[in-house]
Length: 257
Image (cartoon, rainbow, N blue to C red; front, side, top):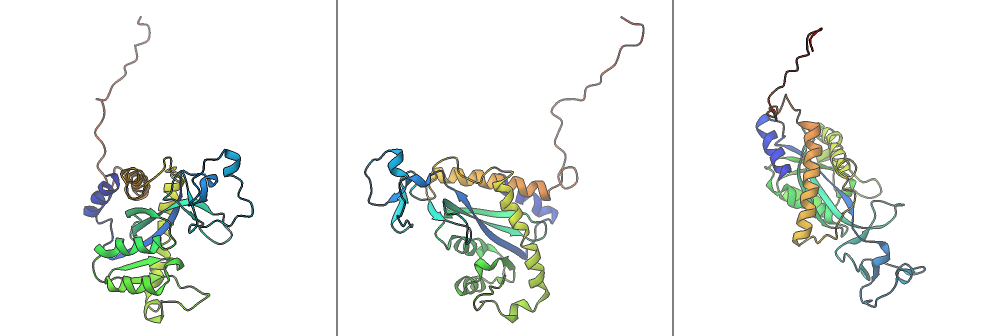
């Protein structure tokens, strides 16, 4: 795949850090309308007006599901934001040049970002660090990260007791990771804006081949964004061979027919 090729090309050039990483996640809109979000036991056919009539009805993922894309989940990125039918996309980035190394898609169940991050850091060598935002500041995530031999450089929450204490925050590397981890937001933002993958174009199935196809598109978009920012043609990569031999244009001399 293209993302794997980019990572493989960057590693021999010492452009990939082997010690410091960051994780983050985002929501990818499903190819499903809010009108299709009905009660799970409601299989009766209805017209367009009936599907959209949900005033006064409390809807949640426990009692409702999309009839056109059942694996999508109703989720929102933060407080005050609108809820949409979405999937989760989580990435692992190295901190030296901001190159995205892994990208996984899954069901947006509320803990998908942290669950995906735990799986992604299992191959990191012991003693590595991983930066993350406040959404990852939970005791379970911090404990599982340390069990994997990785030091969590997670931003501390302010409204409750943080799972990160002074044993981690006193080191200068913690402040550096807090700055470098913001690069992964640019990678995920590239996927959704320049890569035009803010929403799926097909009804995805996370555990089925159709979702594998959607994940491949996401990885290609992420690899392209990382490559455009990290690998510089002509300097870090050899120039591509010419598609045709150079042509020389000769203008006729003055006075000749």
